[in-house]
Length: 121
Image (tube, rainbow, N blue to C red; front, side, top):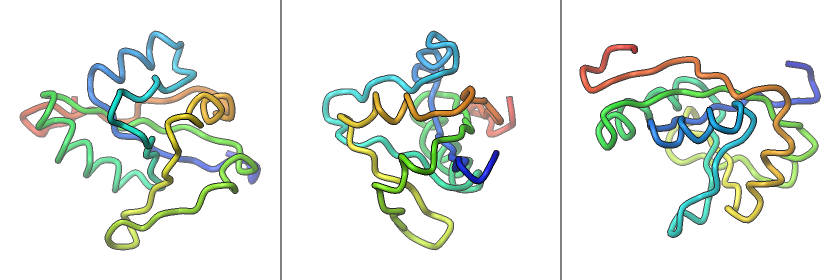
């Protein structure tokens, strides 16, 4: 990606992946009630860990997505560190998600998948 975008990652379960597919891999679905924040993460290692530890356990499968977002848009949000320096993410309010989606450059890619056997799918 160019210097004008930031590459981010998002761990998703099968239902969220289906909604991403329906959008033509162009946007993330709206947050559910009780989910006030959208959490894209800054590195593949962290996204993979969340996918294996949370998505696979709760849904039987999980996927790591990668996508680029305009850097100008992301400047309004601070990077949040929620553990070690690997655990970095943005906290995007649910109300900002439509604008976030409009600032995705290109398509959302699925770069890894895991199932309950903890093997790549």
